[in-house]
Length: 205
Image (cartoon, rainbow, N blue to C red; front, side, top):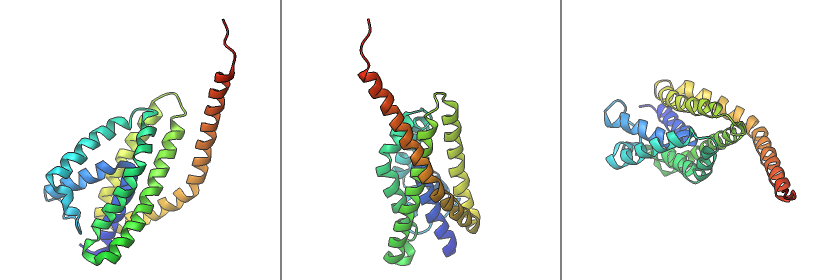
């Protein structure tokens, strides 16, 4: 495996961790386990029984939780403390063959990528949950599932294409995030105003 494929693997794991951490770990671990891929660095540990059991179980839980409007935003908030260090750790492990300096750089960049994708996903979901119907939430969730699988495949088969698309994605994300979070803040401000108005209204017989 050449260096650019290994970089692409580290990058896709960081990117996917911000959306579907457990799916990324389970899919690559399973592919390694059955000999379809040979993961770089220390990522071979993803195929260990305990890692597969844990990531597989959490994958099922996340798949279900992510389809429930409003609950998915709570899930995302909790996973701020899991996805970001998880993405950084996976990027760190991917470049174990290149020494601690390369690993530290991979962890810093990987953690930043994970942070961006996680914030983008969380903000988009919070905005979608503003709609009372569940179908837009389900559509977004299944789209994210498909994107992660496609990204893992593309990084392995066509690393340069994935890295180019990742750069475009990050540029778009840098433009979109401020607008998305302004909308989310305004939405929550409106909800608080409505709630305080109801709390302050006099009771009627």
